[in-house]
Amino acid sequence: MYRVHLDYERVEPIGPHWYGQRPGGTQLPPVPGSPHSFYPVLTFTLGSLSPDVFGGATLDVPCGQIVLPHYFASNFTIEDLFFEFGDDGRVVRLRDAASFESAQIPVYADDIDLRPCALTLHRLPRTQDPASEDFDPDQLEWPHHQLGGVPYLVQPFDEPLVCPECGTRMCFFAQIANDRRLHVTFEDSGVAYYWWCDPCRILGCHVAGA
Image (cartoon, rainbow, N blue to C red; front, side):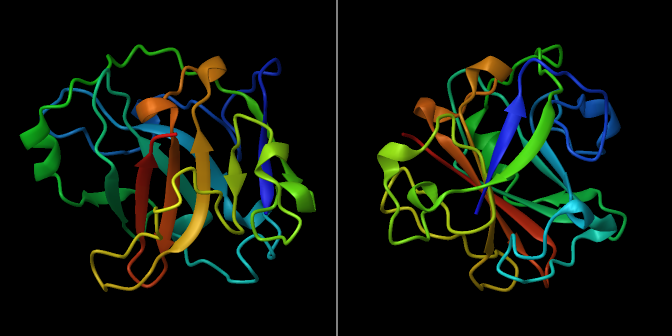
C-alpha cells in the first residue's frame, strides 16, 4: 500500500524511521555459530503510521516499534527466519536456530557500511499497487520497498508465512528489496518479506530470489 522511499543523499541520525542502525543498540540476538549480530534492516514506529496501512488492523507490537532484522552472508541465505518479541520490544528468541548451526553461514564482519538514511512513505499509485486491478509490475520502481497492503511476490509460488507457534497465517508487514546503494543484498538479487503474528508477537522473514 505504501512505497518506502529512502533518501540516499540525506543522511540522518537515529530517529523514529531510519535505516542502517548499528547492531549494538538494538538488543538483537547474535547469529548462531557466529560472533556477529543481526542487523536492523529497517525500523518502524507504528504510532506514526496511518491506520489504513495494514487494512485497518491495529497491530499489538511491543513498545509500538518494530525492527526488521536480517544478517548479511557472503554466499548463503536461510530462507525463513522467525523472531519472537518480548514485552519490552526486544527479540527474546530466534526460532529454528539449529538451521544456522547446521549450515555454518559465513557472515560479514560488523564493520559493514550500512548508511542511515531519511525515510518517507508514499501511497502506491494503482498501477504499482499489487492489490489493485490496474496493477502493472512493469510500472514498479526498483528497488521496491513496500509497507503493508498486498506484497508483490517475485516468485509466484511464494505464500504467506505460517506462525510456528499457533499455526495461523501471518499478516504481511513489509518487503525490502536488494538495494546496493545501501549495501544491502539478499540471495540472488532477491527480496525479503516480513510477516507478523499478533497473538504470538512473532516476526517472520522469508527471502526469495528474483
